Length: 367
Image (cartoon, rainbow, N blue to C red; front, side, top):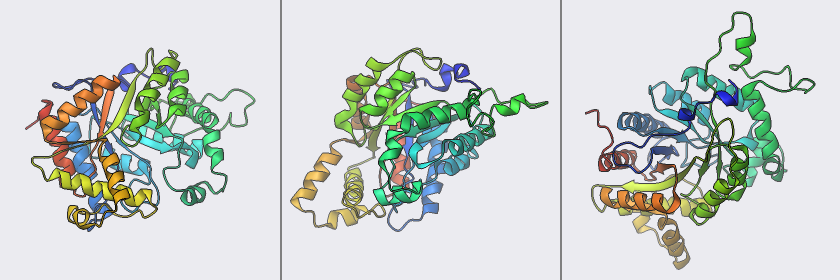
């Protein structure tokens, strides 16, 4: 399927209930202390089912490596699992780190996902490694880690041509085809799916914002860990935007850390997530600690400053407080979609947070 056949409704969402904009889920498949990756993946299935039932528009998983507390090293595998347990919700990568992979491999993986869940797959792409330098070198089989980011536009163009099967005559890959893919429709008796996964560009700075705008692609910004760059990046995306066969006007979502709870216990969950992030940022990645571990931790003044800075970008509290914070963020950014990520030690706490926010916004309740 060529890019000019991607339908707008495969990108644009619809606000439900009283939400100011479509709501979505970003799942990091977090693993808490005393829990296993199996536990985390079971939570992901339960969360995807909840999100679908309550009217969230899409559900993305993100590629990370060498992080004990994040079990999402293989988004394509996880998405296949989630596709088998859902029926309607859009599923995608938020994102696949393109420099870590050969473009043909990604085209094959997401062509396979599209065949499994027709019309429900998004391909979100990032240019960062999603890990530390040594792990990135092991993934890429090279020590030249700058080369991946520098070549991102060329890698993106190559991936798009594999997805559309439209390398020009004379190109060395003209006879190389991503399967499942459009080439199957040209074979005798071939019938090809009318869908092709829409490509999104992800970013936490201006590079991907500008590139997405110039290419007329949808854009996802990582507000949850780069809040200071959110407004500049969205402005750059909108200013750079050129209408394309994919979109006639900009469409931008932002990832937001949000955790709602029935009572004040959620503050301890946020502190635990902050401790996990502190350990990651200081080269000591581990499982997400328990709230009790976070409370007993001997915080230094510098570490307390980090926690204050990090938690300032987490919208947390009662459902009404979180709803108010999300409404305010939407007004400030004009985001076309809010993608919520709930970081907590307990899978039950994460599930409850999304349920409470669905109630707060009056999203459909099948019960």
